[in-house]
Image (cartoon, rainbow over the protein chains, first blue to last red):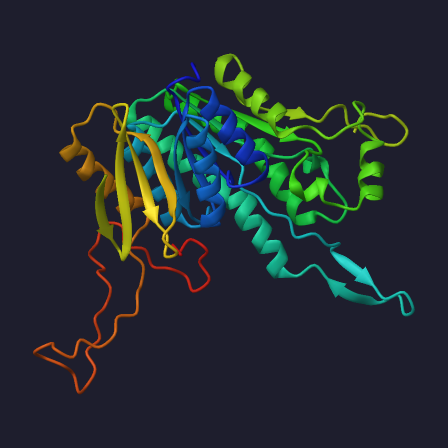
Length: 264
Length: 103
C-alpha cells in the first residue's frame, strides 16, 4: 500500500508515540486523523501538521466509548472519503503490585485496586478492540484496502508492577493472529493486521523520569539509548508498504536484554 | 473566509489552493485548527455543507443546561426545561466523567 494519499487514523496521537506517528505520516503525504483526550493537545498537533504543509483533522474522544470510536471513523470518512490505516496507540498505565505487604506484620496492607485494573484494561485492551473493530467494519463496507496496527508493548512478556498493563498488552499482541485468521475465514483479503510492540521509547513519560532510574533501564538495552518515536513510525511505514507483513506482532526494542545479557 | 455556528461553537472556513481549512474560534478570540486540506475540488457552497457535516461529527451534541425560556407560551410554573435533541444523529449520552465533552 502506498503511504501518500492513504488515510490514517491514529488514536492516542495527541502526545508520545502516537503524535510522532501522526506527524511522520502527514509529512509523507498521508491524510491523518488525530485522536486524543485533550482538546488543547489535539489542536497543537493538528496545528503543527498544518504548519508543515500536511493534511489532518483532530477529534477529542475516549477510545473506551463505542459512540466515540464510531464517531472517529465517521469523521475520518466525512473528511477524507476513506480509511486505510488505523494505529491504535491510545494507552495508559496505572502501576502497582497486586499485593503489598506491611513490613512489620507481613500481612497484606494494600491490593491493586479494581479501579486501576479496570482503567488500564478498558483503555489499553477494550479501546484497542473497539478501534480495530469499527475501523475494519468501515474498510470492509467501503471496499478500501486496509491495515490495522494495534500497539502492544515489550512488557507483554510480563512486567513486575504492571499486572494490568502487561495483561492488556499481551492480549493486544495476540490480536493480529486472530483477526487475520478470522479475515481469512470470512474471505476478507484486502485488510492486514500487524501489531507493534515497542520497547523503552523516548516519550515525555520516560525522558522526564529520574535519570538514575533511566540509566538502569538503558543498561539493559543493547543500543544504549531509548528508541525514538520516529523509529516506531518508520517501522509502521514498513508495515504499510510491505504487503507480506501480516498476522503478527513485531518487537522494536533496540535489543532489550536482562542484566546478564540474556535476551528478554 | 466563511463562518458557521454549531453547538455554540463558531467555525471559520478558509479556502487555500483548492482545498479547505476549518478553524474553531476559541473563547479568548484565538483559533484552533479543526481540519486542514479538506474537500479538494469542491465548490465553496458544497464545501460549506461538508464542513457543517464534519463539525457536527467532530463536536457532537452534548447535554447542555438551558436556562428557563421565560417567553415560552407554555411554561411549567416558572421554569421551562428544554431537553437535548435526542433525535439528533450524533447525539451521545455523555458519562458524567467523559473526557470527550468539547471544551
